[in-house]
Image (cartoon, rainbow, N blue to C red; front, side, top):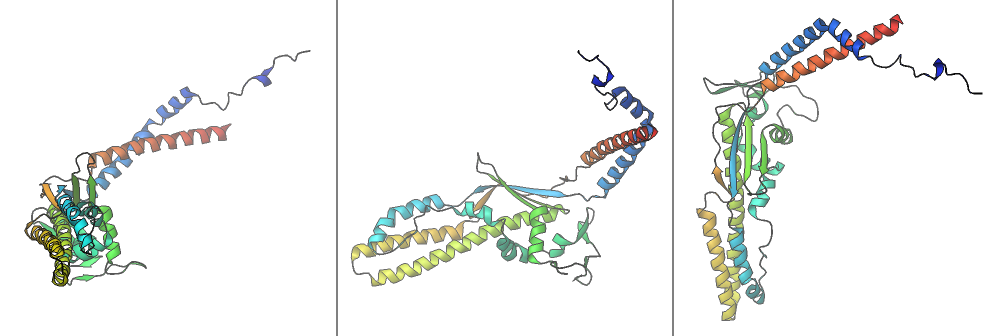
Length: 315
């Protein structure tokens, strides 16, 4: 015989959420929501106003190296050079501009080419920038400008005077960015700082130094190649081999001339960096909106937790 239908077969609705009860609890605690949201919003406003303005200087660049023309020239003479017993590079490797994009982000480039030209306190100890006097002030707990001494208290592995690796980490994460448009091949190089003038100077420094680095590198290689070819032509017996070596020397001389005359050896400007008048960050309005939303959500969660805790205790 079938058991009579009784209450034990009914689902237990006691623990289900009652939306009416939720809205009633929220309405009764509306002043708590308003108060907490207002308090957190005020904290957000104070926090956003405490953040210094950051200015971003951008440069749009285009590769300016002549790797393709030099590569074709090397291909033309590669076979003849082989007959003469001279090994030439194939010219099919990575171009200077492609290598430079990685070089700009490397520790060695920062250490050897940037850091000697950067005033380290501008990177590691800036407190604020005065727009009227165009001067920087430094955190006195880190760096004493009058005596030019570092006084910050740090623990291992950090050092009192910021190391190259620590400085590079700060520069790479907070002040420097490089990106490439895959469609056009244009490269955007940006630098950030509290001083728009420093941001522009660092941007120009990066471009000038990477151009200079590969100019000196190619110049040295061409000079060494000419010295080597001069020795080869002096010891060559066949006139055909001497002619090949003479042609190779002509190519290296042309390459050396390009190295000397080109101002922008690896990258050229499409849009050079400028001293920006408008800050790029912080986005104070967004910060305030985020704090207001966070405060509202936090107050609702606290109110609901209090409501259900008290309800369980009373039951």
